[in-house]
Length: 178
Length: 382
Figure 1 (cartoon, each protein chain N blue to C red):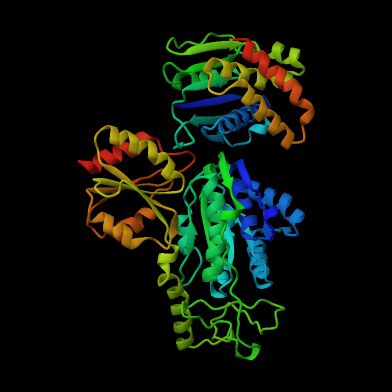
Figure 2 (figure 1 turned 135 degrees about the vertical axis):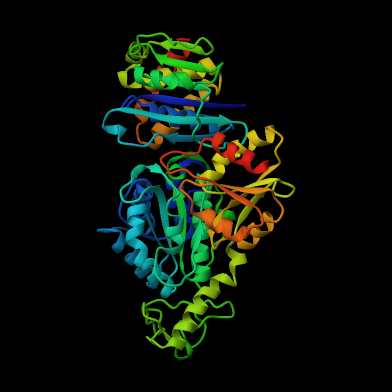
C-alpha cells in the first residue's frame, strides 16, 4: 500500500499545515511517511503545494510525478494537477472556489463546500481541516481520531492549543460531508 | 553534555532541523552562520536551541566570518558548526583550507541549491560536489557525507563531528534542498549515540609538539588556555607549529595531511550495497538521487533486468576500490546526479575502462523522473 497526495491551493489556505498533519498522523499510525513542500515565495501570495507519501514500506522519492490523490483548494490547482492523478485515485476539491466539475471519469471526485463548513466550525481559516477531514473519509488512509491527535500535537507544539477544539470540529465537518 | 539536552524519542522533522539536532547531540555548542535558503532552518533551530543549553549562537555578517568563527571556537575548545548553501559555500572556500592546514575539527553543512551564482535559491541541486572536493586551493583531502533522509541528517551530522575529531579536519555534509526540507520520521536514542572525544595531549607541556602526528598521523589537540603552547598558522609549519617555508617542510606537512586521510580511508568510507552482486547494471547514487533511483530500480527489475545499487553515504574520499571492483563485474554503471556530470568523473576514473559508465544528468530545480533513470539502465543493460 502506498498513497501519495498533492495538497495544493493559494498561499494562506493552510495546505502546507494540512499536509504536515496528515503525514504526522500517518507516522503515528505506523506508516512510513514523507512530506515535502514546494518551496518558494508562496507565503507572499500565489500558489503553494506539498506532497505527502504514506506507505507500509520505505518511501523512495518524496516527489511524485503521478499522485494517487489530490486535494485542490482552488481552480489553478485543479487545472494543474487533475491530469496527473492516477486512475482510481481520489480528488477532493474546494466547491467554494471551483466552479467546474472534475473532467476525469476514472477518479473518485468529491466536492466539498469548505468555506461555510469552516465558518460553522468557528473560523474560515479552518478550511484546510475541513478538506483534510473529507480526504480522510474518502480514502480511509488513517483513522480520523489519529488525525485529530496529530493536529492537537502540532498545534500544542506551536503554542496554539486554543484552536484545537475548533479544528476538531472542522475535521469532523469535512469527514461528515462525504 | 547531559543526555536531557538531546531531543530523544520519535519525531517528525525536516532534514535541516534533524541536522541541527544531530549537531547538538554530538556536543556542538557553538553555531556561527548567516541565513540562506535552503539551510535557514538549521540556523533558526540552532538560534532557538543553543542558548537554552549553555551554547552560543552567533549570527555573523557573512559566510567568511561564519567559518572563521567556528575555526576559532574549535581552538577555544568547543565543537562548532556552520551551515550554508552555494553562494555562501563559495565564500567559505579559503577558510576551509585554513581549517585543513591548521587541522581544526569542525563541521560545515552545504544544503545545495541550483547554481551558479544566485541560481535557484529555493530549489534542489547537487552542483557543489566537485567544489566540495577541490574548491579550496592546494593539495588536500576532504571528508564529506551525503545524507539521503532526515534520519541520516541526524545520524551523519554526529558522524561528521566524530570524524572531524578523529582526523582533525573540517568535515562536510553535502546535502540538498529536498533532503533539507522534507519531513520524515526521525528516531533519536541517546543510548545509541557514540561520541569521539577530542584527543588531548598526555605528554608534559615542554615535550608537546602540536603538529606531530601519532601512529595514525593525527596529532593530539591542545586548545587555548589548557597550559600547552599553541601556535596556529596557515603558513607551512613544522611540528612545533612555527612557520617553516622550506621545500622539505612543505613536503613533510602535505604528505602527512594527505596520508592521515588516505591511509585511514577505510575508517571513513561508508557504502550501502543493494543487489550489487550478480547484477548486470549497478546504479551509483548519493543523497537524494538514491531515493529517486529506488523507483527506477523497481521498474527495471519488473522488466527482468538485474540491477543493483551502490549508495555512497560518504562521498569523499571517493571509494575507488569498491567502484573498480564492481566495474569488473557488470555490463554498465548508471550515475544519476542533480548536476551535469560531477561524481560521474570519479566513477569513470575508478571503473578504468572496464565497463560502460552512463551519466543521467539533471541541471537541478527538481528531481529525476524515474523513467529517465530506467531508460539509462535499459540502454546499458543491452
